[in-house]
Length: 104
Image 1 (cartoon, rainbow, N blue to C red):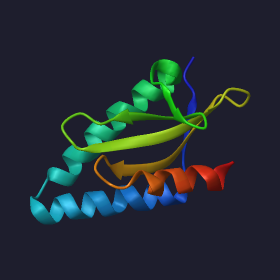
Image 2: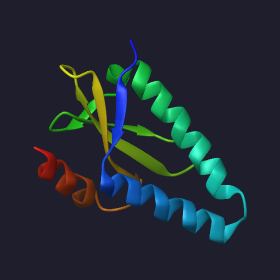
Image 3: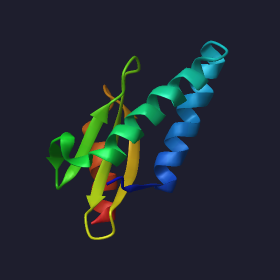
């Protein structure tokens, strides 16, 4: 069963900034990022427990070809996935943990 995927406003902002940065670097690279992001979302929606919990039930998937991770929660009752951060893998972990704390 596929879950409904919801993207928090902070994560939407993350995605917009990432796309803009890649497009500035090379035309079409932002679209490539989106394709890999959407691929990861499909995997999460169809099997959200495939990736391990990393902090307070938060899970993450690393994107292929891009150094970003998508952090999410699973709401089993509502069959929802809540994407709350998309962040570069080398950024400080406090950033996504702080967002985790805001959701709980």
